[in-house]
Length: 100
Image (cartoon, rainbow, N blue to C red; front, side, top):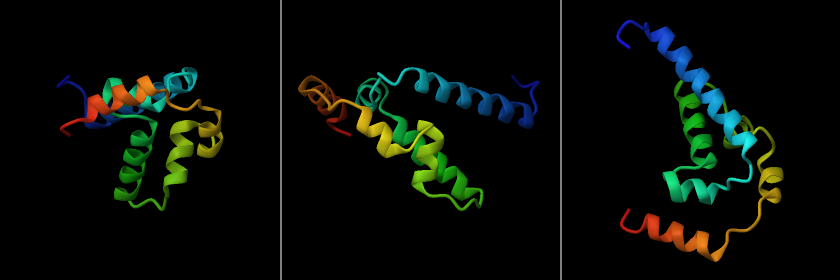
C-alpha cells in the first residue's frame, strides 16, 4: 500500500464508494434500519458524510443534493417505497443503540 500515491489512493477510495452506492442501489430491499442494526450506519449517514465533505471542500450543497447522490433518486420517492420497520427491527435497533 505504501507504493500508492495519494492520488491513486483517492481514486481507489472514490471507485470503492461508487461501488458501494451501486451495491446499495441493487439491494433496495435492505432497509436503513437493517443497516443501522448490523453496521451502525445507513444511507442517511452516508448522505450526511458526503454533504460534510462537500461543504468542507467549499461546495454549495444541501442534504437533498447529498441524498440524491447516495439514494440515486429523490429521497421522498425512495422513502415512500420502503415498508415500515417491523417491531422486531425496532427492538433490534433499540438493543443495538443502548449505551451509545
